[in-house]
Image 1 (spheres, rainbow, N blue to C red):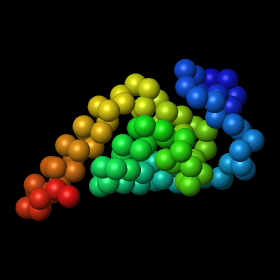
Image 2 (image 1 turned 135 degrees about the horizontal axis):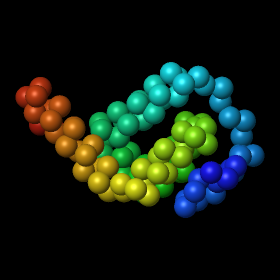
Image 3 (image 1 turned 90 degrees about the horizontal axis):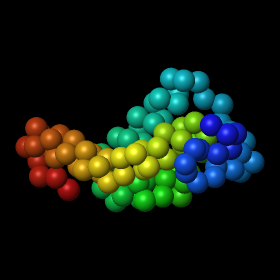
Length: 100
């Protein structure tokens, strides 16, 4: 990986803002929360896959964290949305509630 650039993806500007100081557990927790939001909120999921740099800008992701979502877009794309929809449907079915 070239500094400031996610391979085969859009340029990530390392000067955009100071990177947050997160340890590995905090980083994993944040990514977990974002994926959870993608499961719960279909519109958010679509925006993350369509343009992760814009959809996730408010979360101050590090370049490494953002690279995970850029890779998801590049490698999986709308397949991720289908997976998140399936998880959401399964959770709601288990709880006896219709999906939103």
